Image 1: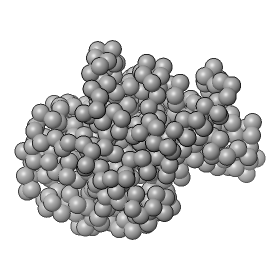
Image 2 (image 1 turned 90 degrees about the vertical axis):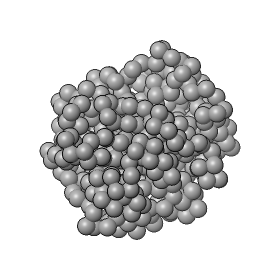
Image 3 (image 1 turned 30 degrees about the horizontal axis):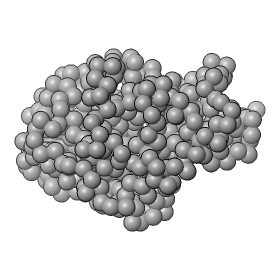
Length: 413
């Protein structure tokens, strides 16, 4: 479904022409080679090895997959090996005090799931109310972290009333089945298109295993359990989920996935964006796209940003990662990065129609490095950068998007 179609012509023709450089493919290949060889290793910036970068930067930081149409994957196969040779929980401490889970808005707490042994990579949120609500679950592998956080925040086994997910990808909803077993009074809310794969995740699990291999998939995502159908409720655009004295308005936001929704909380105006603006990397004040195959749709993604903007949120609560205090800036920067990466892929495909995903990936690595270093004034840490929504998956998603678009345009003339 395409909402608010956007023409992509001369307006984005040269968005990143000035960032391309001779030898770009070579530079991208060198970065990918270092990643394959574990240098830099994903985890070089894990808490305990270096001070948190946002603390170093202080106030300088702005406040600011089918895999058979069932699955969107955050990591390419080359990245995941560097992360998951050991269980994730061996690498990162679990927060056990309420103060470990900072306030994101009034009575809304951020829970860092410690995904991929990293801080500030994957967030879920607890909304305090007469009917406590968890937004996102994280993957099954991060279940112990989420459970410890809920306990620290005073949520007992009989008290969690609602779980709402922005979409069904494993890093957002993979832990839902296990949490429903732990919290017997909770109801799971998910977009109507995602319900079949929440109730029976067989195809989702199988396709993920084919992509990563069984062992790596389980190490990274853990176990994805089915959700009892009688505990699952569907949502669609314009619905309101009542959570005690508060509510969540559902906003349909395709682009990343066709079952993606954003959620605006009634009492604060805060908006849970999932991956509808891509990823926000707070340690680097950097934004990056999240447009994986097979459902990546640039026009729909930009239309979704327009629809979210029209709701005038007071702040954005992103899944990857954290609070964006200035929604206008978050929307603008997220959209700019989507357009820029899409234009890079489009231009390469126009110049070389038979270009490979490997070549597109190399070019996007060079672009990602330039953007990251410009935004953060930090050296590019490709391992940490690539741990969510890998560069390669964006190359695949955008190449598929353009080729399918051109096919449609040709068939209609």
